[in-house]
Image (cartoon, rainbow, N blue to C red):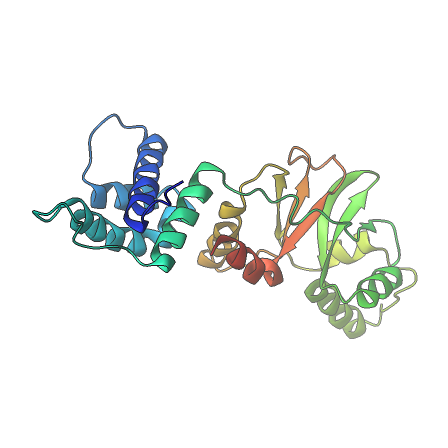
Length: 238
């Protein structure tokens, strides 16, 4: 069996990407490749991430398909370019999900537990955040910042009591926003970094992405993604 040339593999992957971008836009209007990239990058996080590479690949495609008089292609892509464009094509066709990569046991805290338990549990596993449950329902996210804020307030008014103050009491006492997002197990991994960046654009910090079967707060937690996981996600998508 004759191994496909790099140029053939490149063109196959290029065609796949072009067709997938057309499906994403679903406009029915023919667009030049560069315009296709620009428009798709506004709605698809992967295309946004690789848009400059794709434009260079568009130039390379034009060089490849203009044959010399002897039938040989003008440019033969190197192995790294071919590997990368094939990876992009594969990610578009079969985007990875948040699971199984982030399928894991999640530390949770009961809303009526004392603050002392939260501090012990979180420090034992060196966590800076943990979901709060009332029964089986997710009702919030306790963060290290909230604990420190509560400690400062309670020390200031001499009400500091980590044994008799519940997590619910702590949440009520501090100024905070619900700094988490719920997603389902089939959420595309490609969309996760954008969730964190959108919060940053608003001047806030997304502390965690919580994963349940259908993205509902009354379902068991199946995993968690935090800022510290972003490098891992980028490696997976590179």
